[in-house]
Image (cartoon, rainbow, N blue to C red):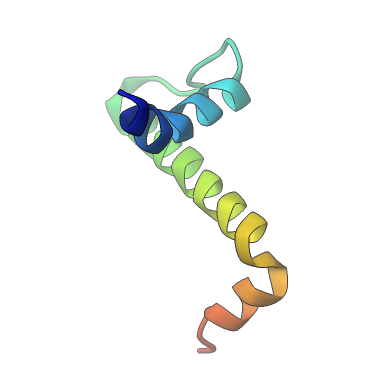
Length: 64
């Protein structure tokens, strides 16, 4: 239970705390999927910036 709580539930708890009492701003499954994907992506980017910083993130992104 300790491993599960620290690995899986932490991101969802953080996203849930950030979104507040209004869980989803959109309706229908397609809109909710999109909104949840954006929330998850924002969480991942926030974690990357916290771990390696903006210069490290810029260095990791390939140029076009």
